[in-house]
Length: 128
Image (cartoon, rainbow, N blue to C red):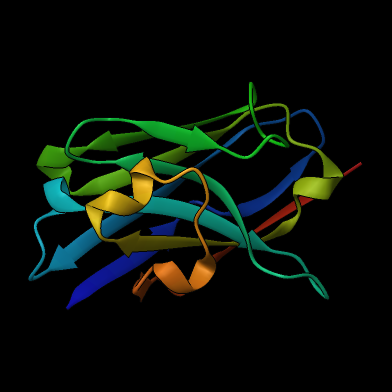
């Protein structure tokens, strides 16, 4: 079992920044995971934002956040971060951290159901 706890959400104005953190614990070594950030806005499906292979640092980003968001890791702390700059109102959503098998990060496409472990989510609200 892997436990994931997200922190760092909040309410900001458009153009401001936030950093989300995802602390992992449990039986799976964080260096052998594909870690992802997903988001879900009211009435919309959950979508992938970014992923990182913690064993090698390979990253993937959704087109909507490229150039604004950065996913990173601190393996010593078993923590993955999502730095979000130039936030827009359309970034408003519940943000979730997820973990899955390492091979996921090498795929061109991933599905929400591919990730077996999820955190409880942290709310990000961006006002104009």
